[in-house]
Image (cartoon, rainbow, N blue to C red; front, side, top):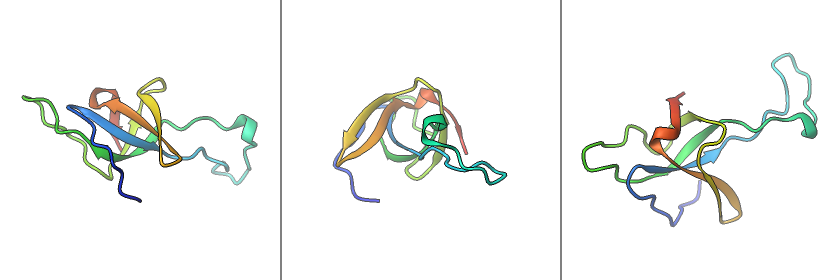
Length: 92
């Protein structure tokens, strides 16, 4: 993982989405047209939190987030999601 020159503000986090699954658990390959967007990712940058609420996630955590959470941004040719910590449903 390369060093990113971005620092989210307040309770925002930067998430790198995990790639879509290309094979089922039973070994069948999923064609590109049928692959679903993952709702899991890895935290790559975090803000400082709000004044009275420190962040509960940290860099490197694998998280589960909502389908329409965050704003997609591109940095160094890679796609990331910038979202509030409230949009994260669970640490997995």
